[in-house]
Length: 174
Image 1 (cartoon, one colour):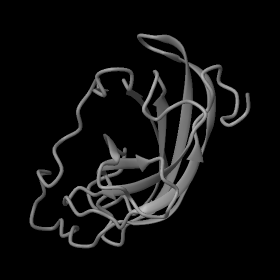
Image 2: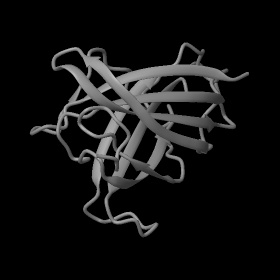
Image 3: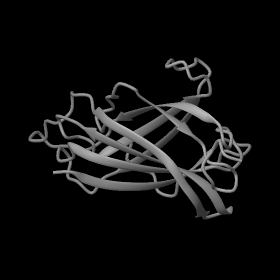
Image 4: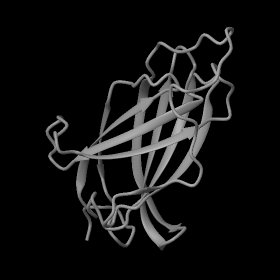
């Protein structure tokens, strides 16, 4: 069964680079289970990642803000994606290789699935762009990983994406 979870995330990218999170999920690898719950041990596998211009959306603190939307389809054989961390790393050198000084953004979340019951999940992530990095109108390589409840991380999935312009129009166009 395919589960969909949309997680709006406010990354304050302006000066601080801090993430604003209202409710924190339980720590990864620290979930409660009884002896009958035997999930864990297999890494998640990212099937696809798409990114798109999310247009102008209302940021809770900043008002109308350009956004970038990521949709990640993940499967996990041991079905422990009920608690997860999604990591985005990006750099502006389009060479199919992650730079050692790449920017890192993380979000954590929970699904509404039972423990050992989340094996096919779509994760939605909204980046509110408050003045970079990533810079408006520029193209970046984004490397996405997903870590499951047992604290096992997927292989990185690479996607190129152009950040919208400051006015919310498609990036690269003036």
